[in-house]
Amino acid sequence: MQDNFFILMLQSIAALALVLALFAALVWGLRKLQFRQLPEGEAAMRVVQRLAIDSKHSLIEVDHRGKRYLMGLSPTGISAISDYSVDETREGSGDVEKV
Image (cartoon, rainbow, N blue to C red; front, side, top):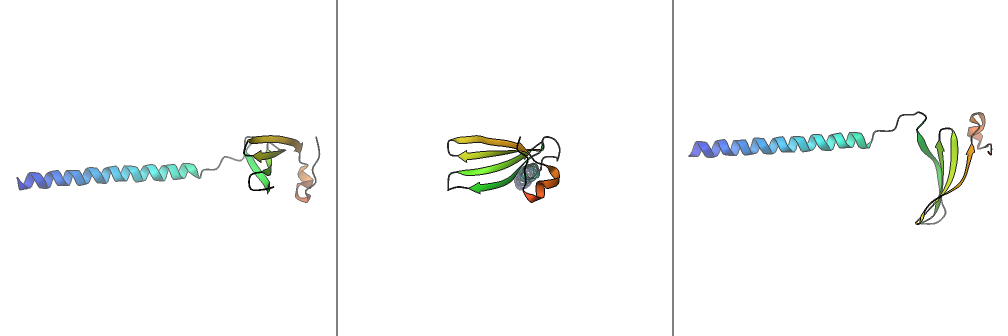
């Protein structure tokens, strides 16, 4: 009787260790996927800058496929304000070419 209890307890501990190991592997995998960045290519999109107008409203400038978009963010939604192309040679100086 004592041997059966020991074997049953050992099996339970081994099963618990297996479940915990699977859970740890799942958490590790999800963290790796969460911090994965999109490849730099044509589909890459990035927020260039953000200007907070007040606690609920802000303006953002987004770069996508060589074109910049100015958008307004509010609790009711997102509004496209304008879009323009950036001259690559003058991008650092802040000059933009209006389309």
